[in-house]
Image (cartoon, rainbow, N blue to C red; front, side, top):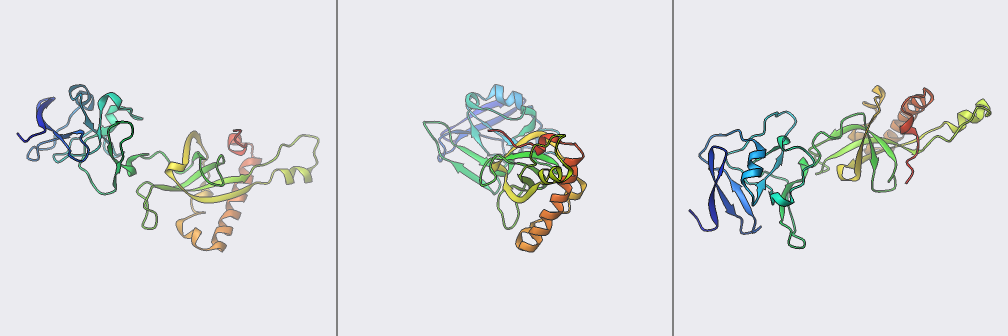
Length: 253
């Protein structure tokens, strides 16, 4: 056995726990010659008290798996906080698009896959709140999501449409002309990084939105204006129908 490593029993398997010289944090390594084994992540967390290698489970795979040559994300179990249950995690081999995060105040460093941060969280029709930029605090509806990024944008993002100027309050005593003027909506379309969005529990299903915006829309100002006109008409019709009222109310913060 090489220096800086020791045998650990996980389930019915013997694996070797090694220390990465770059991280000074134990890494869990499954023997390269062993076939793929199915392990319960809870047993991994309970039996290995120094570190665990985690990777988010893709949506199409229902069973957590352990890959033979797996080295990813050293995280101390005592400080591990997971937004998902252990059944959504797997041990996987390190691929491209991994980044080193520096250590602060003695905390362990992480080797994370930024493309797995928000798996399938933003689907078409999902309503979210913008957190950064000129439209911070505005509500948007996701038109199309790119979980793996694109050739031009090497980060996960969404194409979203939102309301830049919300409808004003109306009363019964107002005339038809005033009601029409105060019920107008000024929309915007934007490419937004996942990190700059906060998902909500609401959804806005509009069939006309799906084909209104694409990545090509943002290359020509004329296409952008045409897309906003289509979205403006759809949103005003939905507002006047009385549905999805929460989406048409400005966020108070």
